[in-house]
Amino acid sequence: CSWRSHVNEVYIIQVSVGNHQWTVKHRYSDFHDLHEKLVSEKKIDKNLLPPKKIIGKNSKSLVEKRQKELEVYLQTLLVKFPITAPKVLSHFLHFHLYEINGITAALAEELFHRGEQLLMAGEVFSIRPLQLYAVTQQLLQGKPTCANGDAKTDLGHILDFTCRLKYLKVTGTGGPFGTSNIQEHLLPFDLSIFKSLHQIEINHCGAKLIKGLTSSKHALATMSVRFSATSMKEILVPEASEFDQWEPEGATSNCPVTAVIPTWRTLTTLDMSHNSISQIDDSVKLIPKIEFLDLSHNGVSLVENLQHLYNLVHLDLSYNKLTSLEGVHTKLGNIKTLNLAGNQLERLCGLNKLYSLVNLDLSNNKIEQIDEVRNIGSLPCLEKVVLSSNPLSIIPDYRTKVLAQFGDRASEVCLDNIVTTEKELDTVEVLKAIQKAKEVKYKLSNSDKKISEDSRLTAASSKSNCSSLTVRPSSPSLPRPVSSSQGNHVCIVLLGRASWFCFLNVVTTSLCGRSFSLSIDDNSDLSPSNSCCLIVSKLFHWL
Image 1: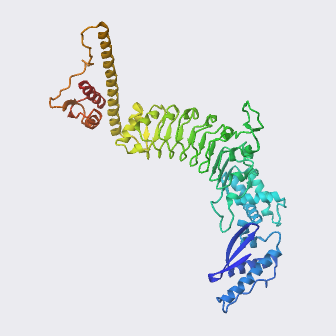
Image 2 (image 1 turned 60 degrees about the vertical axis):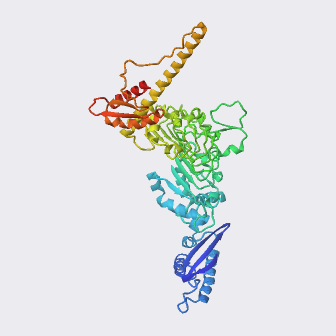
Image 3 (image 1 turned 90 degrees about the vertical axis):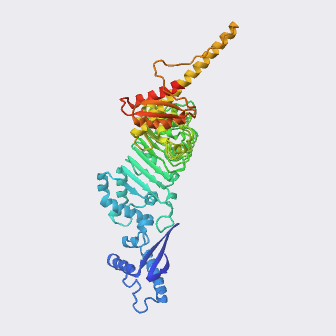
């Protein structure tokens, strides 16, 4: 122990055990309480502790003298108990937080009192990497499981508990732990002492330093590893580095195989978000039963190898580095929920064959064109789409233009987590009618050109002087529009509801710069859809 005095006679004790160091703060009164307990429990000399001074107690010289005397006092106690410090002394020096023997003794005593209760309740048990490191080191040293003679601190209580535990959470720190210099993500530990795990969560640990996780393959159903890994292989097949060529059990291979690796046969949920993973590697072949896979907040740039996951229904690849979705349907045949937010996507051409897709998040990408939405507009099961924070989201009438891409299913689609309104659906109907009319006009125009070309060729072949025939399509079933003769201005009388007055703006921006005025008869019984169709039919008949 080394010392520094502090104001108001608070002494800062620096404790070193091997490469680990930490600090503890105590007043003289804390030393006095410690000494009283040791005299009572361990029969140490009651005169060993320096006496309390009344006169001149705040003088610098007295504080320095007492500091040296207290240091000698603690050093004497540590020499007196060389193997295992008494519990009261261990807690005084924070051995139960930072030192291997103190950590395991405290954990064993906690599980002696609460272990059975925790197992019966089926609760998640939280433990620190430092605690697992301490248990691992204790087992490697091969010392007696109860070195201090207190049955409550027997290591066997820990091993019995871990053997039966089903739900585990291991959480470290991003920097030094507590007042120590201990970096928990640099500590190795062994998880093979856990024999019955169904769920495990690991945060801020070093994935390469974790041993024994694969011993839970037979029962583990849910696994989360975050802020810990640089590759999927580190977790799913850590032994891969030992073999030149490996294959999962049950797979057929034409290449020489040096190892057959058992699969994670019960694992259905895997969360490896917030890591430094750059590739979806072939280790996914070892998790064939996966249904939910979260790889968000990594550095993945390509969707690959997921064709091995036949049961995958939920995939989160948000906040990665994806730029293309080409051929993604060949990797995600049965996907229902797909999160691609926060990538660098400009086109959606790879999504047009994901026929089972229900929920799609494309927010925070680089999609600029409304036409890209057509790639998902025909997906029969799609119900929720998020396109917010893309360049296209600032286009005027963005919502209605996007919803129009879904055709007759527009009312079934929730865009950007906002329920579609009746007004939006009315506008969508207008846009759909205009689009259909444009398509008809395009077809008729092509027909005109074809007939005109055929007439010209016929006339040329017969060397006749007949002029080429031009056919103008018309529909005798449609009433002729009433139009004015004032230049380019055309007046059309509309029999329909006043709610369709918004159609004026849509038409004037859609038809070649020609302006139109509409007069409304609110007494008409025509439905909105029929009114819309009548408008469009009259307009294009006039054209």
